[in-house]
Image (cartoon, rainbow, N blue to C red; front, top):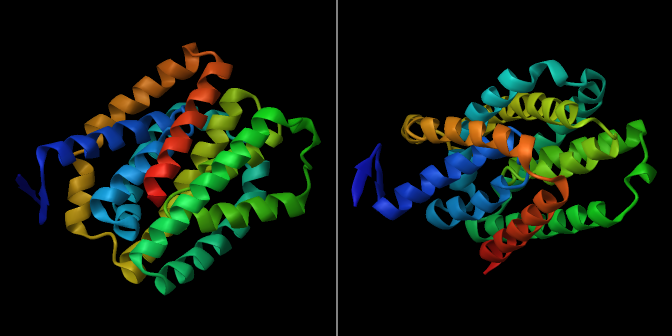
Length: 250
């Protein structure tokens, strides 16, 4: 066992934390979906609500890498449609999180992952050209994205559903998602600090020791996006998402 910033961790647990940091880095630079595999790992170790706060600074650090690499490719028109309703969704998610215990929190996270998996499967099979490009659709997706990102940092598939339905080119899709998540994750920080009390100096210090693994994951994500065929990648993410959901609800 090892003592780190008020945490007592085994070497295996510390290794899993570094693996989560690596996955988060990969997810933010284009390997979207792999972070869903890391969410239940942290939840099992630290608890549902606590893990969401512990993960948030790692996500923000990874967002900075993604924005640095893809910042020129963002579509600000779509971001302007998403931000107001996503902020409202974060407020709803904060209130919901204050009303439930940790076991219920983990169960909700698992259900969201299963729903996300269903959405991703539907997107794989459906005609994405038929998804509406309307303001009401952006408001709906923004609100759902805000709620799910607050309850377990699980908005990835919601944003994928919206941004892919807008038929954005690959780099524009990644750049738009990068700016969205950087902004909304920064917006969530005060609620984790002052309402849920899931982020403090000790948890932030633990995040910082994972920074090299986030950077390594971000580099790996860029390389993978350049080289892996889209079809094989999507089915790999679907499989990992299903495994993540099972871990969360058992």
